[in-house]
Image (cartoon, rainbow over all chains, first blue to last red; front, side, top):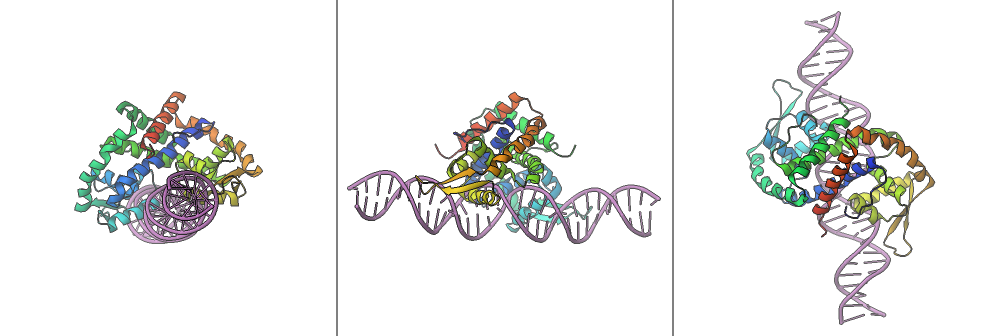
Length: 147
Length: 147
DNA sequence: AGCGATTATATCGTGCACGATATAATCGAG
DNA sequence: CTCGATTATATCGTGCACGATATAATCGCT
């Protein structure tokens, strides 16, 4: 990124920045997660479940701005690796509820260590990070098709 | 994004925000680019070439924080669609220089129209956008393995 | 109660993304 | 000047991402 000559239009510029910064962040996480056999999408999915277990596929999809067609195979891989269980909901048979196994829950402490260094690495202050997240959330809300 | 309950750790939070906001931005662009038969990675690649033609594969890879193994097939598709040419450099036969065809250059004006609405859609001021891009670039620099 | 519309998840095909590896061109130490 | 090291691009395999579509469950209108 350091020597990138940004294109003239601001719209391209911020999209370009989100796009290429994401690649760099993903690679930084990957070097930490690869030893655990996790990808970042798998990791962030587990993070949501550590925060609140028993979510439906649809709830996870909204949180990650993903579609079921991406999430279903990802969740199947995590199930195959023993981190979680997929079970049709009793109240509504269309829904599938995801619950962590003990193996899935146990990863949480390891992940905490891994994650700890990611803030420092940014070189940003907490205020700058909060502002960054706020701007990203605003963009996400305004570009979402619903509403 | 609007009803996302962000996980406890700030590192997860900003990565989550970049990750899921990227999906939303990508979809917003996709609805504009699909009629042209372009994906966003293809579009941003063309943008770099409109800004400066004749770049090497490696120069484009650095700008987009991508690897050659991603870029090579993408460039081959753009070549197959008649937007650009791939030619081994005369000075250094290892390098491949990318040059726009007239068809590739002609897309620029259409793309400008498409892009024009993406700033307004963010709902952010220019200062906020500049701050956002600045923070993202800082993160990119600090998380890059080189240096 | 009955059936068309909606909703939740899943399947399929294409393109992106990267680690590992291959290949060929250039560089550099002796 | 020669051969091992480095550099630029490409190939391969796996997983992510999405549009289009399928399927089955629930909803809602009459």
